[in-house]
Amino acid sequence: MTTQQAHSLQIRNLRKHYGAVRAVDDVSFTVKRGDFLTLLGPSGSGKTTVLMAIAGFVDPTSGDILVDDRVITGLPPEKRNFGMVFQGYALFPHLTVAGNVAFPLEVRKLARADVEARVKQALDLVQLGHLGDRLPKQLSGGQQQRVALARALVFQPELLLLDEPLSALDKKLRAELQWELKSLHQRVGMTFIYVTHDQDEALSMSDEVAIMREGKLVQSGAPGALYDRPRTRFVADFLGKSNFLPGKVEGREGSGFAYAAGGQRFVQAGHADGRQPGDAILVALRPEKVSLGHAASSTARNRLQAEIVSWSYFGTGVHFLVKAPGIGELTVTRPSWRLDVPLEAGAKVWLAWDADATIPVADD
Image (cartoon, rainbow, N blue to C red):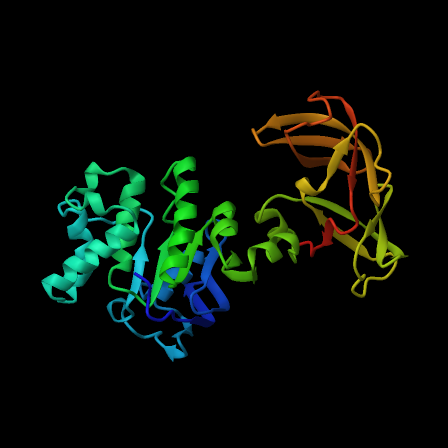
């Protein structure tokens, strides 16, 4: 069921106010044809309100929504030709799987032969062709979500909108369906707009992620770029986890610059971007970018002695909480395979990281 043409979406200066509450505050972004965009943010950030405005279920206070440069802001939901997948599936309990998938085609009054052909194609796409005669209550949660996807895709919508569709599933099934959704997107070639508060979902499936906070779009970009180059403390801490080192710039150091933090001297790669000696700086350091060993590294630009406070085993990795003089507590994540430090509170260890492992961020 490959679409004949993917469509672009543009949001211009979108606002939605409920009295004095600005649920969405001047949000603008563009989704290219065939892309998978995820709106990511904590509860109350405005991401679902943006999605509902795109769907036509929420009237914006101001701003425009465009599909292929055509303004659709005033169109009712039924005129937008968008597919929608909800968190709670929203299946008709009295209809069979095939009946649920056929419903949007029957509303559009397609011929019976066309309905049957498209339903079969849609169910095969989500690997449920053998379950067409079952009722929703006879299916698992994952199977019900696949039915909802098939129903949203069967009429070949211009966009597919997904509102936290995996949040009701258990962790293992959610991870499996993330792979399936990404594969499905690649096969159908349609533009997907996805809403979630789950960072792993956003990173693993999206072409682009738009991070929202308190009604505003704070940063957007490809998952890898956002993860490695967050602009603010909020983005660095929300999209994954980070350690933060507050300090003061000391001056140039090779191709980068040096800064002091907690009585220690560290080196940061890259230009100082106008920062002068004595200026305050905050750098973010991802836990997995810190090495941990018995002895001080002879090659890393930044070294720090610390003590293990506690640790947690997660199968593929071990998460350490360590404490360093003058710096305080830091988190370090290391692969559990051939770990060469003791899993012992109070053990002395050395931390090390390269000059390009950290990135300066705004302290918001």
